[in-house]
Amino acid sequence: MNDSRNPSAIRSKALITQSLLKLMHELPYEEITVKRIILEADLVRKTFYRNFKSKDDVLDSIINKAIEEYIDALVSTSDDPLTVIFRFCKLNKDLFFVLQKNNMLYLLLLKLNEKIPLISKNADPNNPFIKLMSGLEPDYLIAFNIGAIWNIISLWVERGMTDDPSDISHLIEQYLQRLGD
Image (tube, rainbow, N blue to C red; front, side):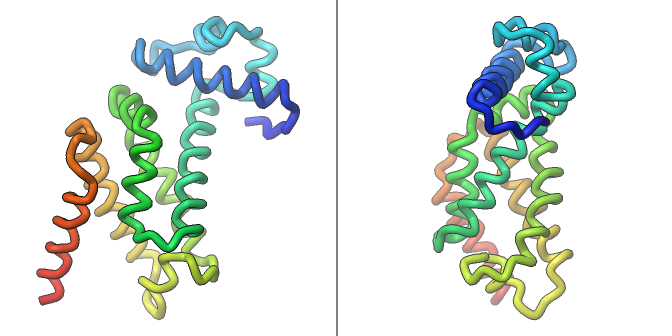
């Protein structure tokens, strides 16, 4: 993806990403072509390729942006990580549903597995991983946490995100408390 800060490029990228997401609601991902995206966005092919390499690049940029916003929220708040995670999911509900519909929800997991270990090395005192993993081998613990939370989020999305996040958090807390007993 081209990271130009030109207002025209920013507007074009937004139109392209919105068009892909709209089309993903209507069609299976594998049936969506660059041609369909540019027709939906009312742009020319040259504009598409000036900003993205492929439709996969467009989807990757959407996921990257969402994960970057999640990480920013995670390290910039004193809220507990579960609260931040559920807030992130609610804000990105449409993305979660369209990825699930296309059997691509796992792409968020892959991106989390790539990005979260990088922030665990950040010594910022607000970094929730510093407190949780101080003195412990972080790689396995991060993988454990991402996997556990990911499966919870996946189930929540499969259920239509209708269960109350505070109920889910409370259930997890009760379970973890029993593990400690």
